[in-house]
Length: 133
Image 1 (spheres, one colour):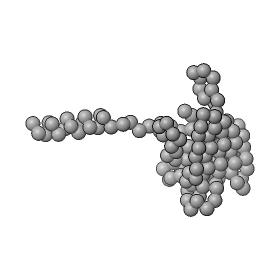
Image 2 (cartoon, helix red, strand yellow; image 1 turned 135 degrees about the vertical axis):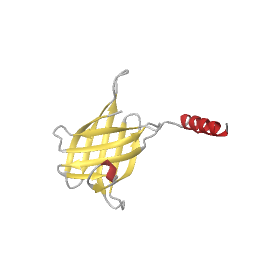
Image 3 (cartoon, rainbow, N blue to C red; image 1 turned 30 degrees about the vertical axis):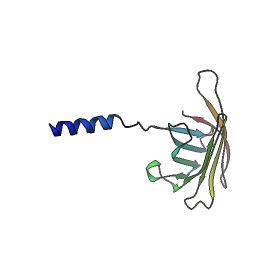
């Protein structure tokens, strides 16, 4: 009887736990020369769980699980109804690796369009569009 109650309590406790979901926003230029992809949580504030950045054959990733490349971290991130800005920095927070600047718009119940610029110091700057939530 106690074992059954314990199993039921564990099951119901697990069923009541909140669901944690994330989705990638993938930004790249038309020619595929550069990209900035970031994993966001589905909460009401901008919450970045991981990111990857590429410029030509050079790659950076926030954790080995997100891809090959030199390590990076989210330096700062800001979002409001019309813009989204994310900076990627080196692990020591000594230099900026990349900066993404986006404008957002939508019409009615349609998808949101996100477009802007990606600047990777020493590599270049690109006009980018993004796919994702």
